[in-house]
Length: 107
Image (cartoon, rainbow, N blue to C red; front, side):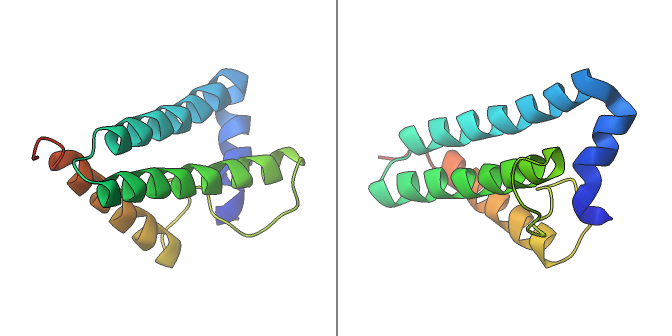
């Protein structure tokens, strides 16, 4: 039930709500890529791009599974599905991404 939260959100908020949710994930990806582009060192850049790519790709794999485009994998919707180890890792990854963005001014 927790992995199918996009289907529930789509039912409750409709097409517009689903598009807004997808837009939020796209904005997160673009922000993560811009953090990576402004990172002071190559490691921080690769780390920021990798973290944002994996978080958003998990979300889009879940969305694709709920739409019937991809097979069900059991990957929860990032930041939205109920807790567990996946939520802990997602939040820790977002914290690392914030740390990279915080250190972007140092050279």
